[in-house]
Each structure stands twice: as structure tokens, then as C-alpha cells.
Amino acid sequence: MADLPSRPSEQDLVDHGKVLSPHLDPSYTADFDGVGASTATKLQDPEDEAESSLRLPGGDMHRDLYHIQAKSKRAKLHQRAATFSHPTEFATSEADNDEFVPVHEQLAPGGFRRAFLAKQARSVSFIAAPVTRNFISFLELYGNFAGEDLEESDDESAIEDEETSSPADERRPLLGRRKSSKRIRTQGDASNMKSFFTLLKAFVGTGIMFLPKAFKNGGMLFSSITLLTVAAVTMLCFQLLLQCRARYGGGYGELGQAVGGPRLRNIILSSIMLSQICFVCAGLIFTADNISSFLTAVTPKDNVPLSTSALIGIQVIILIPMSYIRNISKLGPLAILADLFIGMGLVYIYWYDISSISEMHGFHPSIELFNPRDFTLTVGSAIFTFEGIGLILPIQSSMKHPENFNKLLGIVMLIITIIFTSVGVLCYGTFGENVSVEVITNFPQTSKLVNAIQFLYAVAVMVGEPVQLFPAIRILEQKIFGQSSGKKDALTKWKKNAFRTCIVLLTGVIAVIGSSNLDKFVALIGSVACVPLVYIYPAYLHLHGVAESNLAKAGDIAMMVVGVVAMVYTASITIVRWSES
Image (cartoon, rainbow, N blue to C red; front, side, top):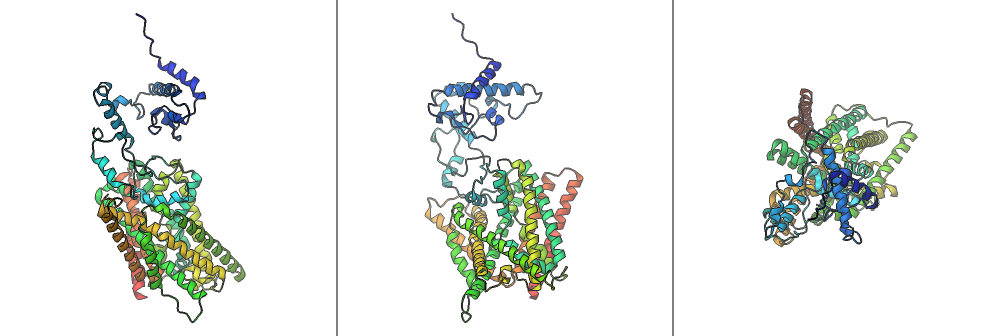
């Protein structure tokens, strides 16, 4: 009887792989679908997303060559793992997995199908990370606001059916229902440069326009020191939250559940919902005031322009149908124009302020270094301006190299601190005690350029309102409607639409109430809605989930105490000043 050919040794497999590797395309593997790349492949080049070699021309003919390469990589990994005295998470074989179906079971009737279903159940058990490839996909980060999955799936009922059925159910189709195209990746692919500009977009918005009046409320010196202090403390709290994320993973609410249970998760999500609604209210007021000033400047003097409340009502009418949009990326073209208009407004502010200060040979004579009466309003406005914690976690997840996120975040925080401080100093130094809440109204209203910038900036803020409102709506919808989808049920869809209409009407009512004192309304938002999210919750999560040394625990407790005291004190003083006015 002839001897059977001996099985090649691990060293032979490694040698064969060395010969084949230069001749094979590294972006293709022996995997069937190209998604479940082998462990060895992932270890060798985790940044590549390989496809199946069957996709190549003549893929069947050279399939065995890719199989030899895959065996070579596994043999090489096994040799390396054998040099360690402790097991690693990558050295486990498929047979060690509890869900692996042995060969003798696969040979039984229906066994191969059960093995396939078990493999598929493992391969789809991840949560996709948001990917920022362009500006349109930046809007999808709001579908993962604070790291939470807030997007409405294409067919949620189908997902429920798949989740409730057993992975090895013989009645399930061999190929499952198509899931949303947004949930197919586990690692982002955004470069450092793209992530840098995404962070800038996340922080620069409406709040910068309220800073000149905040400088008047606090004084030039006090306001400058406050902005620098708030920036430093905010950066510290961002780091606390990122440390918690590194240990537990997930979004902001999921971190709360991991550390403090479902109650803390609900509290965090409620704060996110409240802050986003308040941001939309501030945007409605800002837009209404600027449109009112624009109409006053461009219409004849005998015409009475619309009141702020009426303009808020018009915005609400426009915002209601926009709130029905389920796919937030459809707002992309409008958001691109919005960022362009905001950039134009900032360029004009710098040009006019610097020219005016040079002509006056110094700052306006009415400026103060410290305003003892209204300085607390400056604290709330500064916190409002730096509030961007909701997009920190999804932007980090979208990066190809998330290990570089801390460095990028530090650079962005430094840049926006310089921008915010310089805008406050220049505008307050130019107009002094005459500075308005919306600083654009201080510029010459007879200039057509100013009128155009004022109108475009107001439009930019208005088109950003549905984007900011989206997380609040989805958080409330998930709480009330669960995972029920209106894709196939018209009644459910219109119930959700009616609910969204009520939310928009509520924001309009709040905006009308806050329109009488916009600067105090913004300060109140910063004190009540932003302080817990930025300063209290991250410190609490770090204290109970990460901190081990006494020094770290003492720092977390101090941060929480300072946050609570600042929230209560600044909010109470703001309410008193509001009632007096």
C-alpha cells in the first residue's frame, strides 16, 4: 500500500507563504465573503479591509493559492504564539469557540447549514462605528450623537425578527434580511485631517455670536480668564469621559448604564435631550432677531417689520416638515451652505473689528475689566459656547487611527479657544457697552454687505436647527415608541410625525419665552443643560468606573462639587437678573 503524502509542517507552510506573498494581491483573502477576515490577516494589517479572492477575475482558478497563503499566516502566528508563556486573545482556535460546530455534527443532515448560521450569528454581532468620509457623512454623526445609536433603521421589524429567532433555526432563510447600510463597519476610516475639521465643525456654531455680550457682562479681563479656564476644565472632562470609554466602550448613555445602571443612563440621555432642545430654542431666537434687523434695514421706514415672536412662528412652520426627515444625511447640501455662511460671517467680523480698532487707536473707552453685577452670565455663556461633548465619542469612533484623537482634540481646543477669545475681545473692544446680544446687529446696517452676511448667517443657523433637534427627537421616540418602525405601518409613522410636530411646537413656545432676554437665556442653558453633561457626569463616571488612586478620586469629587455649585449659583443669579429685567 502506497504511503499517503505527509501533512506539511508549520515551517513548510510558512516557507510556501513567503514564496506566494509577493505574487498575490494583499487586499484579497481566502475568506468566503471578505468580511470575516482571518485573525492572522487582521493582526498583520488591521487597517486593510480585505475582500474575497473570488471577486478577482478567474478567482476560482487561483483560489487554492490564497488558501495556502492563509494557512501560512496561521502557521506563522502559531509559531509566534508558542514563544509566549501566557495565552493571548488572538491565539484561540476556532474549535475553542463555544459556538463552533464540530465536523461530525456538520456531517449530520442539516449540519452544514447549522454551522453556517452559527458563523453568521457571530459575524453580525457588532455595533458599527460612524464613518466620516465627507461632509454629508459628518451629519450621520448626529445619528450616533454622544455615541448612541439614534438612527432609524431601514426595517426595524425585520431586525426584531432576526434577534428573536434562534441562530440555528432551520426555518430561517440562508441569507438574512438586508440591514441598514450604515451598520456594516466596525472601524472608522476618517483620516486625522478629516477628523480635525470635523471637530472644528462640532464646536464652531451659534455660541460664538453671543460671546461679545458675554464679555460686556463679565468685563474684558474676567471674561478672557473665564474662557481660558472653561476651555482647560472642559478639556480635562473630555479626557475623563474618553478614559471611561476606553475601559467600557459604547456611547455616553451606555457608559452610564455600565457604571451606574439604567437609571444613570436615562438621566444622561435626558440631559442630552434637554440640551439639544435648548440649543434649538436659542437658534430660533437668534435667527428671528437677525431676520428682524435685516428686514428693518432693507425695507422702507414706514413699514413695520414682523415681530420676533412672529418670525419664530414662521421658523416653526418651516421646521415641522424638516423634522419628519428620517435620514439626516439628506440635509447635507443645506448644512454645507450653513458652514460656508458662518465662515463668511467670521471673516467679516475680524476684518471690521480690526479696522475699527486701528482707526480708533485702541479699544472703546467704555470697556470694563470686571463687571461685578453680571459676571455670572459670562460663566454660563462660556460653557454654552464650548459644549460639544455630544460629538466627541462618535468622532473618535470614526477615525482610522483613534489613538491620535487626544492630540487632535487638544489642538482643536487650543484653536477654538483662540477664536472665541479673540472674537469676544475684538467685538467688545470695538463697540464697548453698546455691544448687542447678536453682535452682527452692531455692524453698519446701511451696508449691503452687512445685510447679506446678516441674512446668510441667520439662514445658516436656521438650517442647522433640524440637525440639532434630531438627537432629542430620537431619544424621546425610542423611549415612547421603542423599536417600532413606520416604514410599513402608516399609523406608526404618523404617530411619530405628530409627536415630532409637538416637539417642534414646544421648542417654539420656549423660544418665544426666552426671546425677551436672549443673553440670559443662553447663560441659563449653559448653567442648567450643559454643566451636568460636560463637568458632572464625566467626573462621576470616572470616579465609579475608572479612578483607582485616592488622588484621582479626590479630583473627580472636586470636579463634581465645583460643577454642582457652579450650576446652582450661576443659574439662580441668572434667574434673578432675568426677573429684575
